[in-house]
Amino acid sequence: MVITPWGEVTVSTQQEAVSFIAEIELAQIQQIRSAMPVAQHARFENKFKRQ
Image 1 (cartoon, rainbow, N blue to C red):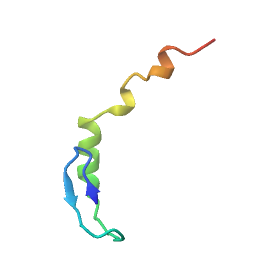
Image 2 (cartoon, one colour):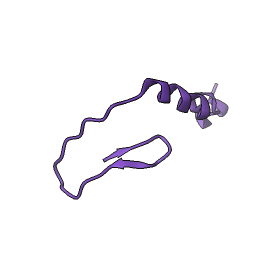
Image 3 (cartoon, rainbow, N blue to C red):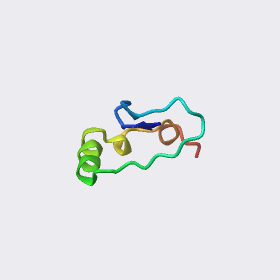
């Protein structure tokens, strides 16, 4: 199964053991990273770090 970062299934199969090759568009990756900046999100462990 191949799933986009937005949760859309692009390739799927009913068989158990299958291999897929998927092309990744680097321009699309950069666009998604700028629209979904998860690296900038606050993390629980950073806020409540023991000192």
